[in-house]
Amino acid sequence: MTDTAPQRPRSAMPAPTPTDTAHTYWEGFYQGLRPPADWVPRPNPLLADEARDLVAGTALDLGCGAGGDAIWLAENGWRVTAADVSATVLARAATAAARAGVADRIDWQVHDLTRSLPVGTFDLVTAQYLHSPIADAPAREAVFASAAAAVAPGGTLLIISHAGFPSWMSEQPPSYLAEQLVPNSVILGWVRNGGGDWVVDVDKVVTRERPGPAGEAGTADDAVLRLRRLR
Image (cartoon, rainbow, N blue to C red; front, side, top):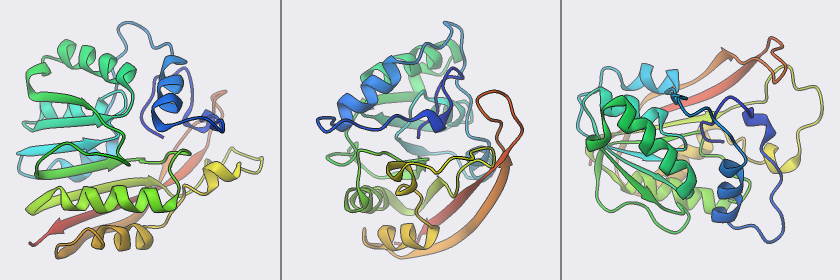
């Protein structure tokens, strides 16, 4: 559930086919979106709230989608490596970064996160809504363990996840979406499997306004987990 253009709400994530891979699924998802040529991807406001007071350094944005978070980080002094499995969405993100004047501060890389991450360690590793119907629980556990290993000593791991479905959603959510809702306590265990000593700086659930696809009023809960690596 990465950030997308307004034409399709996150709840419209389609079911994968039996032959889908991460690449085919997310390429198909983003190719099905038609953002306006001048559309500007916006950062997750929860990321901005949590990262605003951090000392800028190197950042890794996992599952960067349309690039709103990576661009915001670059605009605020970070040198960013942004990874996503979809080359289509990375090309759009790179265009938006150039339009924002930060193209030289972001390195866009294609990665299936269940198979590889960008090389190196980073002062900030951020994973925003890293939900994917292609990745089962063991695969997601491995991704978060790898994300933890990519945090430099003294650095921050920031994970923001959907903690529930929007209030306007009256129908029973399909199982391939419901299985993606994992509490922070479980994610923290996955992170610790990646090694290192961690301090939990933030562990909370935030209720935000989230209108429905027809503009109906609603709210949804997001989980915020911000961890600091001691060593």
